[in-house]
Picture 1: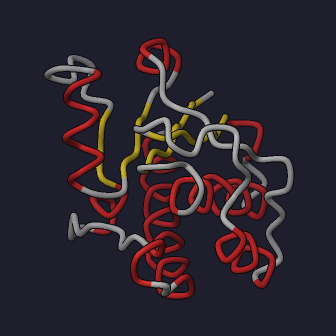
Picture 2: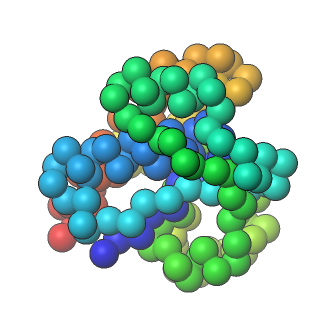
Length: 152
């Protein structure tokens, strides 16, 4: 089983969107049993809060349910517990390098890296463009899933 942890700043917008988009994709491909998928934050400011309402509405618009999700912060154990730590932007990378210096297992990757462009996922908290971010994340998750299934 491949264990994936999606990570962003607060775990209320981008990383939960990625978590539930990826869960939807693996379900659609009938490979959900091959994956464990979660999300977390690099900071503690949103811990315990539900998915940000506009992000939740965007997922619901696409038929994806994220009810029950609450923000959590990454832990040192997450590095050992997950195979991939997928981040949304370079600020997340800075935080991850503080938690897991030098990434000895080469587990930390930008989501868009799998699309071949390594661009950052925009933060809709600031841009307000939840549809655009949904599309960026869906494209990244689709490319990530394709990559992982080809590795099998």
